[in-house]
Structures are given as structure tokens and as C-alpha cells.
Length: 473
Ligand code: UGA
Image 1: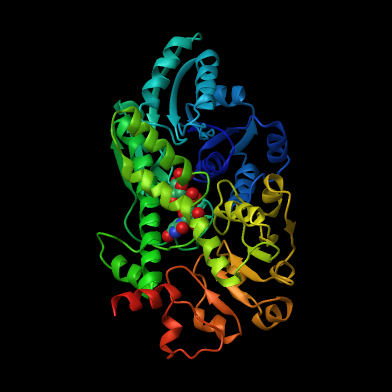
Image 2 (image 1 turned 135 degrees about the vertical axis):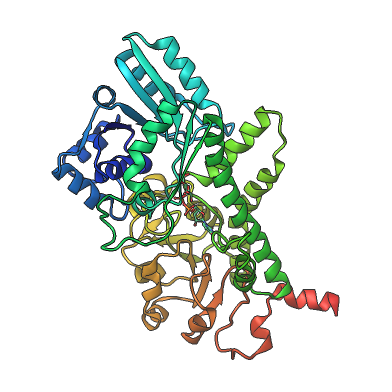
């Protein structure tokens, strides 16, 4: 089928490339002219594993083209809207880019178009789109509007697109649902050539779930908000573990073994970030508020998340006494590993808080340095983790990049001023780190003091626990 994708961000680019990979003829539009020129010249505006190869192959097969919104609208029988919906100051999603695309479709397109909202939008955006197309159409356009929310994680978006658990389609007519089924059929029946695996993982086929448009829109916001809630929940459990001397990793493992809970998204840390969870939780709160529904549960989720940075700073303060004048190395700037995206990254909030406290910050990230520099020019950016750690009073791990797992601890020990690791992502085993002569502080797990034995009871006892035991003895 001839398909159009409007917007070449993480979602649009992955969608366009993967739809071409499964056999469609795709035209992807981008309004940022620099970005468009880069894509047309074979370059990549973002880092996303496997995406570059998939795009290259699709262009070679003449199944993927990049150009203007107008050309994309003229191209496809179905048009996927994948433009940004950033948060407004009041927490609402800013829908002006979606509205502009809808108006252009209404004015430019003739004949039939299936207009598909893939961007994350508030419930009832589909209904607004329908009205808008009716009001502005001028070329004899006939149309259907459908919702097809994406569940793509940055860093694994190609895998998620080609091997989804579910494909959700919100359609209020058989025709719209039928077209979307046809578009996704190669993925449902696994009949496409997979660029990722010689033998694709076996298992059940993705569920193709058809609902009304409003329910599909809600599925997306409810899913992201639920996952964010899981993270804030485990972060609070981690706080409690620190006080009573329990280990959150074990608590999460025990909880996750219950299939009703599930093990995923129970990793505590410095909080969730990225362009999805923070804005989607905020938008969902606003949607509920505007509908007269008090979803204050989500306000707590947000509050807990915002407090994570304060807690890291307090941990540092309790280790270093005074933060002002100290040199802090921050490892990891991307909001999670395997992406160069720093939007709403907790690492950036952390760095800002450290700078406000008067610390000197040296940071290293394998992929996100350029994007971080653009929004946070005032700190030192380093080309490797050792350079960042030079003369550091503490190393704070903000993103769990695999590269850090291969660190040469002996070399690291020679460059730091004070051997303290504050692992904000619980990526290391504390005993191993302390065996290399570092004092190790993580999240919701017992502190491991350098030079203590594993059997030493104090090893598993935080200051908080000692006072707690004092109180309860
Ligand atoms: C998220 C969802 O997982 C996707 O399903 C969804 O399609 C996407 O948003 C979207 O709306 O576009 P993404 O933002 O790429 O994907 O990243 P996640 O892997 O979900 O991680 C989000 C944040 O939560 C990261 O900062 C991560 O470090 C943090 N996180 C995740 C935790 O702190 N603990 C966990 O256990 C899991």
C-alpha cells in the first residue's frame, strides 16, 4: 500500500522505515528543513539502534522517500500523523502541529484518505480531527480517522515495531479497521523479512485489538501512566528499604514473580524521564481534571519522580558533607541507555541541581553529549568516563550504559580524588565495586563500605537503619 508518515522524529522515522521494511511504499515528511536535507542525503538526525540500516535498505529498494508534508499528503492512501505533542506550561498536550497537518490534509488532499493519529494525543482528539477535516476540506476529500497508538521504546523501537505484543487500532468503521489490518498484516502473520534476527523469536502472534477511537487514545495514556506509576511505586519501596535495611532488588524480584504484577519496570533509580512518561503523566492528569475526574494518584507519581533528584543530592551531601566546591563526575546524560535523547532526562535535572549547589560537574555520555551541550552548555563534557572522573570527589551514575560495566576499576581508582560511586541506576554489584576500593552507594540497597567483609552486619546497615533500629530496639 502507498503510505505517508508526517513527522520524522523517533516515532515517525521508525514507523516510516519499518512500514517500508514490511513491504509498503512510504513517503515520510519532515518540516525541519535541515533535518529533511540530512535524511535526503542519507544521514541520520537521531541515534536509534538498527534504524539507519533499515532506512538505508528501504531507500535502496526505492520504498522510502523523504520530502514535504504536501508531497506526503498527495502520496499515501493512509497518512500516519507522527508529529510532536509537547507539553504546554499548564500540562496540556500542545496539539498545534496536529491541527496544522489536519488543515493541510483537508485543503490539499482529494479522493479518499485514512488519517491515522499515531502521536500520543488526549482522548477525543480523533473526534476533533474528524470535525476539523469536515470544516476545512476543499478538494472533494473523503476520509476516515483512526487511532493507532505506538508502544515504541527509544533504544529498541525497531524491535518493538516489528515484534509487538499488541497492535491497537481505534476505528469507528469497518473500512478503517480493515485498512489498518492490511497495513500490519505482514507483522501479524510474521511474513516480512526481519532485519534484526536470522530466526525471529517464536511465540504468540501480536494481538490485533480493535476498539473505538476514544478507547485507543486512552489505552496509550493509561499504559504510559501505569508504567510510570510502577516506577514511582518501586522508588518509594526503595526509600523504605534504605530505612529498614532491606534490599529493593530482592523485594522487586519477589513482587515481579507474581504474574499479576510482572517483573518489568520495577527498577528503582533517579526517576523516569524522556519525552513520553513525564509529559504523558502530566497530560493524563489534565485530561482527567478537565473531565471532572480526580486522578490525584498520578499527581503523587509525578511528585515522587520529581523528588528523586533531591534524594540523590541528599545522599551526596551525607557522604561529602558539603557539596559546594566539590568535583562531581556524572556518567550518563541520556534519559536511558541506547539513545542520544536527553529530553526531560533526570541526569540534566541532577546536573543543574549540582551546579546550583556550587559543585563543578564533568560529564560523560557515549551518545548524548551533543544534545546535552545544546541545553546545558555550562559544564565540562568529557570524551571518556576516566576523564570525567579525574580528581572527582564522587562519581554519580545517571544512565546505565553497558560501556560502564566494562570499566577498569584499577585505572579509575588512580584518577579519582575520593573513591565514591553513587549508582543512581543500581547497575553494579556493591560488593564487587567495594572490592576495588570504592565506597558504593546505590538506591534501596545496603551501602557497601570499602574494606568491609560481606559478612559484616554493618555492611548491610545504612545510617537510617541504625537509627531505625535504635528507635525500635
Ligand atoms: C515509553 C514506553 O515504554 C513506550 O511503550 C512508549 O511507546 C513510549 O514511552 C512513548 O510513549 O513513545 P521510552 O520513553 O522510550 O518508552 O522509555 P522507557 O523504556 O519506557 O523508559 C522511560 C523512563 O523510565 C526512562 O527514564 C527509564 O530509565 C525509566 N525507567 C524505566 C525506570 O526508572 N525504571 C524502570 O524499571 C524502567
